[in-house]
Image (cartoon, rainbow, N blue to C red; front, side, top):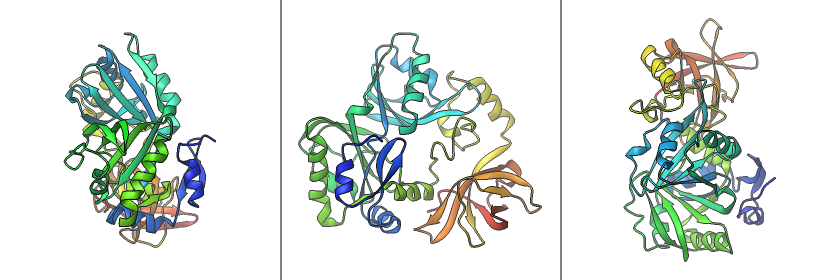
Amino acid sequence: MKNTPFTATHIALGAKMAEFAGYNMPISYSGINEEHHAVRNNAGVFDVSHMGEFILKGEKALDLIQRVTSNDASKLSDGKAQYSCLPNKDGGIVDDLLVYCIEANKTYMLVVNASNIEKDWNWISSFNTEGVEMQNISDRTGLLAVQGPNAVKYMQELTDMDITNLKYYTFAKGRFAGIDNVIVSATGYTGAGGVEIYFEDKDDNAAKIWNEIFRVGGPQGLKPIGLAARDTLRLEKGFCLYGNDIDDTTSPLEAGLGWITKFSKEFTNSAALEAQKNNGVSRKLVGFEMVDKGIPRHGYKIIDADGKEIGVVTSGTQSPTLGKAIGMGYVTKELSNEGSEVFVQVRDKALKAVVVKMPFA
């Protein structure tokens, strides 16, 4: 397993560790519920240094991004970022990602999922016919997500950059916790607000940043948070997880990602996806709450009142905020409307659930 710059720190703090995307990652520290509530109500720190980062440079960098991503990156100006995806040629998704505009029309950073770093690199490279300079900086980039309603207030103490007034999906680059060339972006995967902090993993940058973050935030209740709470937090907000809710077989339109699928330009498989939009999808990703007692798990069948299989659970958990079981899954278009009654097959039982609007909380 690979380590992040913070693996030894997690172990020293007593985190429960496990393999995730090839990395030795902290799953939980004090417990999922406690960590979840810490982020929702105050602030928490996630080590997400396993994520991948690519730099694309040159006059044709934007053109390459436009061809391989579904969103319209031409709308980005310096200091802005957007959520997007890499469509494949068969109607599915290679990966979802963030596109950062470092310098418009010249330099961009793509942030991809840890499990897809090599896959995404090869995919984007296969379209690089115009000599765009590509750098895979994943192994030398550290990344912490400081999330929660008080996160920005705590982090502002560590920088002269005005991060308090950063709008959602914008970023600043400068000195943070005594380290230069740090990107602080108003992004994250929890729906609780906060920032993500990118830095070069050299010298003792990681230790300095971690220690400074907890120096200012620790006395105010800032806690280290594991990947398990990251999953419950993102699910409550209805955020897709690649490999669960979206993959090579799910289209962005089926997944409710039409808002990042812009047909004002041509991109990989755009004609087929536009036809799908015009004709309508046959299945949709929906959120549901359990009516009967039971927790929906990834891979469980979703059936209708007659016992006919209509879909599959892609994500599910017991929501710490709501105190009830929730999930996401693909169902037939006919049963995708809010209020529709569906059933989750748990072993030999059909447990009732109802389709609800997302986010859940």
